[in-house]
Each structure stands twice: as structure tokens, then as C-alpha cells.
Length: 140
Image 1 (cartoon, one colour):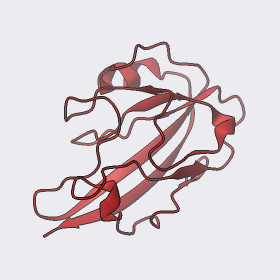
Image 2 (cartoon, rainbow, N blue to C red; image 1 turned 120 degrees about the horizontal axis):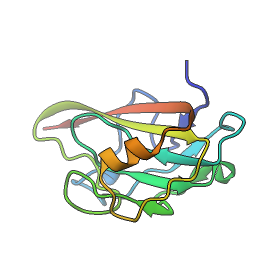
Image 3 (cartoon, rainbow, N blue to C red; image 1 turned 135 degrees about the vertical axis):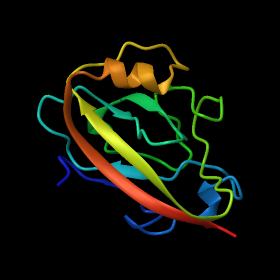
């Protein structure tokens, strides 16, 4: 069970992510919202892990309650495309699963913009909880 909940009004958990949020569409980040994170959370970070990172974000205020469609996070890292900021799914063929994983941290990460995923993961030692959200995209 998740420690708090992460959702998007653009797709249901386990559903299909709309093409507008992919490389075949407008490549805009989907709207995300979350419930109150665990007590003692000082910041949030989206560090999904997995084989390919599409968005690495941190410095998000727990009380914000969400990010609007296309809204940049306060601090963003270098993704596996080699760019900073959101880059949507771009599967070669077939169905692929994509994950957003919001971590509640008991500290504020002190990393420069453009940090790589390993730096964000190493800096998040004060984890209070995690809210996962998975979706699918099928490329024809």
C-alpha cells in the first residue's frame, strides 16, 4: 500500500496515458495531484527509477498538492534523453509501462539543476513515504 496517493486527471492508474503527453503529441507533463504526504515530509521528489528516466524532479513543496499540466517542477534533473525537464513516453513499438514515483523526503535536497538520477537517489536518505502511479502507452 502507498504511504500517500498520487493521481492524474489525464489518465487512471494502470490506464493509457494520452498521446498529448507523449513524443507523438505535445510532450507536455500530465497534471499530477497527491494527498497529504506522511508527517515530517519537507519536500517531494519524482525519481521513478526503472530502465529509462523521462522526468527527474525535486524541491516540490508537499503542501502544493499537485503540478498542473505542463508545469515544471521547482528543480529538474537530467533525464535519459540528455535533457532537463519532462520528456514524455516515446516507445519504439508495442505496450510499455511508465511510472511516476513521488517520494516524500524528510529533508530538502541540495542539488543543482541538471543532477543525474543517481545523485537524486543518493541525496534522498530521509524518505518518509512513496506514492506510485503507473500508466501504459502503446506505440503502433
